[in-house]
Length: 375
Ligand code: SF4
Image (cartoon, rainbow, N blue to C red; front, top):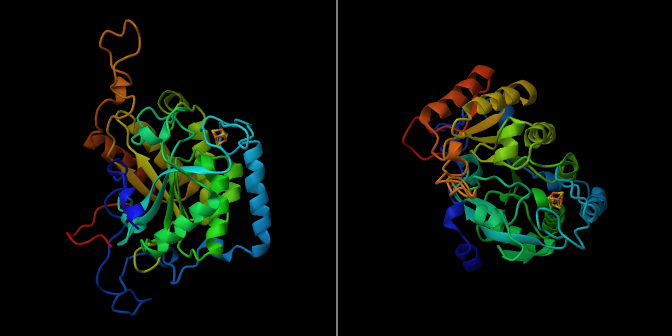
């Protein structure tokens, strides 16, 4: 446990938002226990406890296939749209991550997520080092934008990762295992989940992704993941090219998010207010890009689901390469990515929210209308 405690990094505890839903002390009709809470949710969004995570209902007979698929992806890597095609047992691709291990920066109960994810005891976060995107504003850039020469964490085999998951559950009493920035280590994660279920894991798996995932990767995760906690960052390819260094991000995110929803559906809760299964979309509103945020909301409502649970996030701040002096010789004091070198304005956030509501979305991660505790 001391290992868990000492691994917490303050810079990583800033994600998340205010409140997922309202609660009251009175019980809903489906629940008579005095400890139950009414979430004012339509029955389709409530799950009768106990919830059994997807990996516990996966037939044992499909395990060998999952394992074989995980290993084969690593020998000719197509796990994300970078399509490096490298044999990761021998070398590394853009994400600088091999096949036999994952690099982990932090493992800890985490209290910076949405209330329905973190609950009272925290979300069991595993922050992976390295990434397959290169967002110029990345708020975790010191661990996500690696250099060959610099170690950004410690290495774990899938079996070791599995035992950390169980430790988070048993010692940390967390509500779920939250895999943060896992796109480039999906096979190792799949193997770890299969291993963890053999040694007693029983909490849901949260796949906390940029949505820059390949469909092959999502196929491997099908039946292993309960909650997709998915970013949808920008809408236009030219913006994605400039700010994420991935022109195909918007198209990929559209396809990936649709596939995620097909697998797990809209976000659902047990009566204690903890999310157990479904899709939760995060959109970080960017300075001057509220129009793209609006497009994203219209896409979610029109092409995914009007019941999509959405967190419109307002905590953007310049970081990483944004605002650094220009590298041009004749830069003359110019700042890099000057167009996003400021916090986001309230009106920009409201504009995205209005677009979402006009499109028909209605399930937001909002603050409570009372001063009480969130859940
Ligand atoms: S996961 Fe890594 S090696 Fe594989 S395609 Fe993506 S960036 Fe390349």
